[in-house]
Structures are given as structure tokens and as C-alpha cells.
Image (cartoon, rainbow, N blue to C red):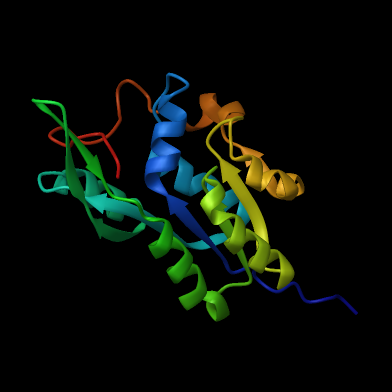
Amino acid sequence: MMKEIKPQNNHAFIDSQNLNLGVRSQGWQLDFGKFRQYLITKYHVKKTYLFIGYIHGNQGLYTYLQNVGYICIFKPTLEIKEGKNQVRVKGNVDAELVLHAMIEFNNYNKAIIVSGDGDFHCLAEYLESKNKLLKIIAPNQRYSSLLKKFNQYIVVISPLKQKLRVNKKRGIPAGSKVRLW
């Protein structure tokens, strides 16, 4: 008698700023379409939640992300004045990511957290205790020491650069700002 294989129903929860800035700090740009396909193929991800700060004028970017299959969860941003003529945009998505991972808890078999941020330690700990943590995908080798206890779950994305980077011919649609918050 053959054992029936149940289809996997995994969800990914992505801190877009941590992912984007993490790969950019290494001198390359992530192709978000390729990355989503990687999550589907490698980890059987059915839903991919991308937590991102909303910036007026970035509609082209948001449309692109939704067209390649991301479920975008937008966070209002704050403009913080730094110096005379410099403004920094802040849109911390940590609480939203944790909240949605818990709202969706009964709707997935396993979760993937995409971030190297130690603020997700409590989420990783809880998911692990419930046997629901599949992977933590960190953008680079310099992830928070708070996540070191989950080393067996951690996948660093930087070795996948050749596979997941933006081709110079493609990329994010023209007219879009590339910064993700």
C-alpha cells in the first residue's frame, strides 16, 4: 500500500526592508519575482506575505510585487527629519509580521520568516515550540545573535545571489522607487 503524500501548505512572512537592505549591503539587488518562485519551488510556499511601508509614489513597485504573487501588507510610514535637508522614512513592520503569522497560524503547516532581525526571536521560538517553523531566511551572514539558537533553521540568501539577483535587462518596473520599507 502506497503512503499518500499530503501537499505542503507553507507560508512565508517577509520583512521587506530587512531583506532588501540586507542584500543591497552586499552590492546586489534581489529579483523579488525570482525569490517568490524560489520559495514556491524549494519550500512549497502557498502564500507569501510581504510586509512593506507604504510610500506615496511607489505604486508601480507595489503593483509589480502583487503581480508576481506577493500579498502586500502595508504599514504607514513616518518621515523623520535628520539635519537641515535630510529626511529618513521609517516604517517598522515587525508587529504586523508577527500579528499576521499568528492570525494565519491555523492556515499553514509551516512558516518561513524572511529576516535576520532579532525582534522575530519570540515568533521563531513560538513557531518552533509548535513544530511550525520551517526556515528563517536571513539576507546575509550578519543576522542577529538572538537568532543563533535557531541555526538549524537558518538559510542565508547571499550564496543564492547568482540565481536570485536582478538581471540588468529586467528589474523593477520603470518609474518605481526601489527602496522598500
